[in-house]
Length: 194
Image 1 (cartoon, rainbow, N blue to C red):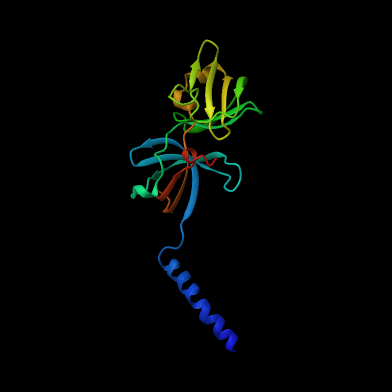
Image 2: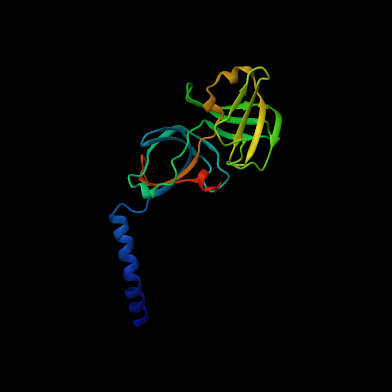
């Protein structure tokens, strides 16, 4: 009997803490997404549909999330772009088509591929990408998740998409209790954690 009383007495603080958390709204959640638009204090994201695995940014509709009020709870400001994935082996690129409100999977012919390219590389850094060459029907773009610089040939109709279509937005991970308001946010792309 004394052992049971001792166990209950030691567990009481843990039980009280659990009750306090439940009464105060409990624990929050974490989501990850790619920033497709940044409008002041609000980011628009395409969320990952494969949490815990290799990210797949394909959850629609896009969500709007207010950045943390406390600047100490956020890393570097994220950049926006609509490139959601690049699969050079399969010859497919995924982009968000803002006008249609949907994700396009575009087949391409690989013209040139350079791996092991970091974001601070002069070929990537400095705002020179994406590079759209209408005469060759090609786009040169950078996919930071796999550190690939690729020149791809696509159907000419896709070359009319806005240049941001071919630019990868930063990946962010955020903690929230209210889905529209981040309490903490980390710029995964700038932290190099892909």
